[in-house]
Length: 332
Ligand SMILES: Cc1ncc(COP(=O)(O)O)c(C=O)c1O
Image (cartoon, rainbow, N blue to C red; front, side, top):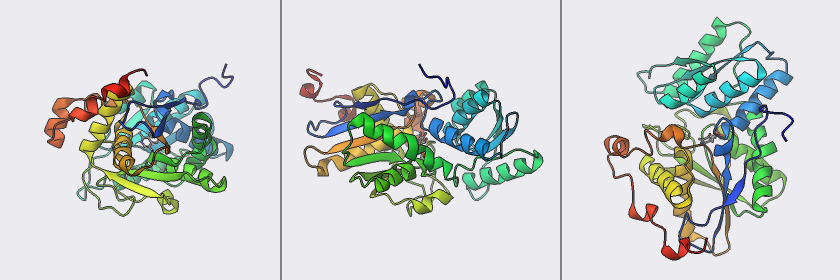
């Protein structure tokens, strides 16, 4: 029994996936953070950020949190605020998934929507709105997911140790998607401090500026950034993959139809990135990857054929994504 009830993030399962790719001699482990109560890895981030504000005295029960979020952090903060007796306002942009907003509202959160500015920089517009609201509401605080050390610390203290424990350790590669880079930094710091050989692979979106890319249109939430977050300066991934949105869609569908895991766009990007690296790996290589969030809020986008055809102008499915080799399915 969990004596802390619904306050703390869960220790999520790490499972071996053997149907995802046709190579039989690479061990792949999925960290199922879609099973967090808030449905994503941001449950950990939100918990870390709120604990920091409470322990430093910046936030008290009955207080208010205002945060810019494209969806998952908002859902997780909304949930965390319920169990901590704190009010919550989410500042979102037009990219925000309508279902994510409904989820935040279901937890009692207020949602404040920013229009896309003339320069197209949604993230900067959201951050400015947060500053305006903080001024309007004395005593309110922001969690600053883009710069707070409590963000990576949450992943240093929970995500990476759990992955190691759940996979038996000795991972050669760990794939994480990147937005604030908090998850990556926490895992990276753990690897460095414990002298591990694990290579950290950052999975980003085409159109994101995180790793020197040019800013461009990004329709799917969860990964990438239009402006460099403060935290990103410390990110030192061993490898970076920038993934097209159609490949995120195909990665998600492959994971759902080959492995029975319904995940969101950033996990689809990770599947696509793993597919690119796999042909270069030698037998016996051990890989871990984050299943960052549940695919349910993506049913009208990633998993909707019409949306994919009309928005991304490509066919959603590739034959090899839906059909595994017969002998790969047999006996498992
Ligand atoms: C769906 C999703 N993708 C990617 C990430 C990684 O984001 P960040 O770099 O902000 O830790 C998260 C983190 O929780 C997430 O929920």
